[in-house]
Amino acid sequence: MAKPKTQFVCQNCGTVHNRWAGKCDGCGEWNTIVEEDPMGGIGGGPGKTPKKGRPVALTTLSGETEEAPRVQTGISELDRVTGGGFVRGSAVLVGGDPGIGKSTLLMQAAAALSRRGHRIIYVSGEEAVAQVRLRAQRLGAASTDVLLAAETNVEDILATVAEGKRPDLVIIDSIQTLWSDVVDSAPGTVTQVRTGVQAMIRFAKQTGAAMVLVGHVTKEGQIAGPRVVEHMVDAVLYFEGDRGHHYRILRTVKNRFGPTDEIGVFEMSDKGLREVLNPSELFLGERNAKAPGAAVFAGMEGTRPVLVEVQALVAPTSLGTPRRAVVGWDSARLSMILAVLEAHCGVKLGQHDVYLNIAGGYRISEPAADVAVAAALVSSLAGVALPAERVYFGEVSLSGAVRPVSQTAQRLKEAEKLGFSSAMLPASSAEIPKGGRKGWSEIEGLPDLVVDIAGSARKLGKAPEED
Image (cartoon, rainbow, N blue to C red; front, side):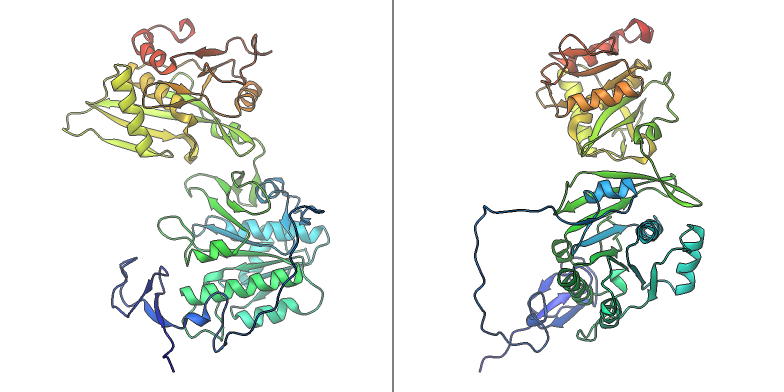
């Protein structure tokens, strides 16, 4: 009889090894490799032997469909990110830095659902019942009918939530504290996290209760534990923000029942998280229109247009290698913009330090910010402020051309609503209103926009209103 094969799995990063070693090749940690039975992983269990399968019914792609039943919280920013509310029978994973406000957000969501008559169970594995009650009192949620428990054992949690009427929403805070009797390893390890999440997802699918799981993040900002957990759940949300700023962003990374590029903006206060219905006003609230090196970028986050200020500082340096510092944008893309400005536009930045910052701690991921960054860099180099009533967007290619971006009409509409009167955008944009747009005094669309911005470095000595 063949000897059953075993595998060695790192309990820190989940890397599988053929044999035991003192140091993991994946993460470099010592003494984290543990021997595991492959039959105890996903799709199997300890001591289980394969059984003969049974045929399942096959169907066709055509047929009746129905909208996924959802549980709306009444918190518009949270409902926006989840695609209209929590889907019954789904599992949602929420990650974020420690102390960023994950438990606060979920407590407010639990209280809002409870006021709407839903049965909510909140299970805390990190805090005692008294600590959770203190938070509920601070948030004004102590008078709601949210059911509370402090437990970390997976079997005990499942027995508790299965007792009585089926809950509409179950919140587990957090998955790193879960441990199961069927797995012989410490809580927080890869095996325990995977087993606990699998059990919770199985309960959600069988009963139709929505399951929200809270996960810790690593130093790199990704959810700790095996990546297979993110594949198992139906939606992954990241709660982002800087403790030095009072706002928080809830971002969708994965969603099987909705869009994957939506964001919800919240403002942290002593009474909890407050919804920010117009994020553009938040990111432009302390803008200095007369300062050089500042350009307003009209961006998109999913279906929501967001206006944010791009700040650049170009200063001479005596060092052999100039410094490049970027906050809120891709540093590699900044290097590309600098190369295009120097190669195609004659803007010499090789002897200057370049500092780029996105105001408010916001992070931009779309390439449409290229034109705004280029404008801010040239403005800082010339020492003259850009027109205060103008927004910028467009993608810059390595050839020096400016490519159009999507959803131009939505960007212009948001800028018009906030009082901006002109826009600098690619001339080939298909959504530019013909004959101008009501309420806009000027819409510029230039065939060679980047060269025009670079040429502005020589004529920016004029007053902004003469430009």
